[in-house]
Length: 270
Image (cartoon, rainbow, N blue to C red):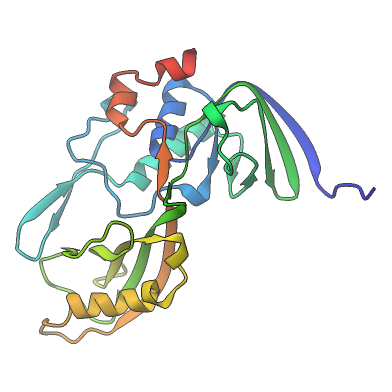
């Protein structure tokens, strides 16, 4: 029998959390439990928390961001989800509560174990296999399936060749579908110098993520036709990168309930 090329390591814990959402990170921080994080599932930029959410219970200031719509109406939002995720990741890292971090292939996402009955799972990374044993494993989140398909949040970035000096910096779509929606929201933000970059946010199902209809080129054309068609300046729109992250099923959605109302006590301590 050919020997395995991987090196096996065993880790033992009393309790661990498997999860990547900010709700999972905050739970791990609050209860000081090790968490295994898959970086592929972390929040994308330009998704915000409610501005009224009080994060003082975890010693974080929820900074307010104000956007201007085409109508001139102002819309207030809280800090970016990714910013809070990075704060939690930094704290958990220095506390030694993120024993592995990065991209890895696990053995528990498909199918999801019934009633989270997990006693051991294996994580593979960098030609190493880590077998994780615990008395209690909390499977906090995993990719959501709708009609048997994964659904992704998608950010497409578009660079502008001229200075954008208009007041409006948020455009919302009027034709949102249940699943597949291109440019459901488009954000303008300053990049290098006085230049602006466009972030077009879409929701795309797994079966359509690689089709032309939902491609970066299709996104650029829709941004050009829906936003720039009537502007005084003629902008050239240049495609940048595309970021995707699956929409997640979570054990608990409310950060307020996790932080202030101890809603995870029964799951952690039972």
